[in-house]
Every structure is written in C-alpha cells, then in structure tokens.
Image (cartoon, rainbow, N blue to C red; front, side, top):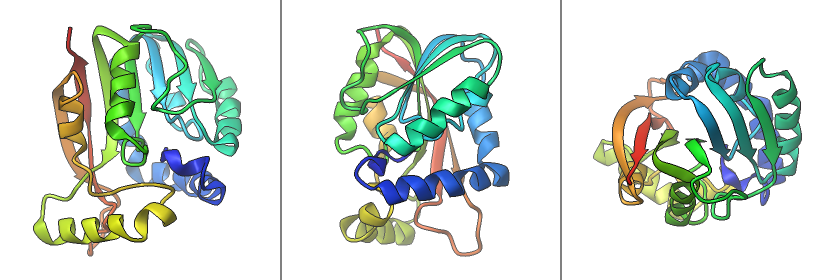
Length: 216
C-alpha cells in the first residue's frame, strides 16, 4: 500500500475502496505468486488494508503487519482476524523507515506497492535488511519505471509535478530493482508486468514482482 495514506487520509479511504476491485481484476494472482513458498516469520511493510493476508501459505507461522495509515490499519486488523487458520497476524502502527522490530527477527519481509511511495526508499530498504535474518528473503510487487523511453519521460514529468500528491506519495518512475540490489539483497527473481492492461498504457501500469535474498 502506498505509504502516503497517513499524510493523505482521503487517498487511504479511496485506496481501500478501489483495491479489492484491482485484486478481482488480476492483482490477486500476482500477490499469490509473490508470496508462494514463504515460511516461518514474516514482516509485511505497508500492509495497507490487508489484501495480502489471505495469500500467505500455511507454512507462514507469524506475520507482523506494519501500516502507518489509521483507516487502513483498522481495515487490516479486521482482515487479520478473518484471514485464515495458521499464521498469527499482528497489525501495528509504524513506517517503513523505522520498523518496530528487532534486528534479524524475521525469515522474510514483504513489500507490495510500498517502495514507490516511501519518503526515503534507501532508508526503508536498510530497515528491511536490518530486520530480516541473513539468508532470509524479500518478496515484492512494485510500481517501477517504464522500459520504453516515451512512457518513462511521462512518468518522470508526472513524478516531478502532480502524481505524488494525487497518488498518496507514489512515484512511478523509480528504479526499485536497482535500489533493492544496492541495499544488501541479491535479486533472485524479477518478472515485469503491466497492470492494468489497457490499449494506452497508464503511467502507473509498469510493475515488477519477485524475490531477493538478504546477503550474509
């Protein structure tokens, strides 16, 4: 979930209304792919309204879901109680740049549509690196910069003007894969996709999902 929800409460409300429709339109499948195979303890950074919760595999035993926006946190808390048998899901207040967790406390971290909107992407990734144990994993789904020059130019113009305000702090032109690789992780899988698929691509349609291993 874009981390601007605390600063933009109207956007948080809007996101909670429209995101289930996006999941029904195909985003849920990407969530399942990104979370498949996880096990043990997980920290989810920017849990939003809890749309990932039902996709955690049975091998996941505990989830600490961190979300700064009060409205989304309340919705996520309700979903945590209904999610599934197995994992104990705790929803807590917090921001990506200062995670409420001890060093090397988790087997994996999950970020979905978060690193596009944090105020300091590298600080957030340093925190993720800190709380994941050596050899643990980062799983991600993120908006990224386009791979075509025309759309990339449009993204950069929007990021410099109106998009972060209307998108709850989201930046659509970030090179998030490079940021992950430069923060103590080795990207082990990355698959680009566009969502939604439209005849004229939206500036926010380029995405990537995948995984990265925390370096020792």
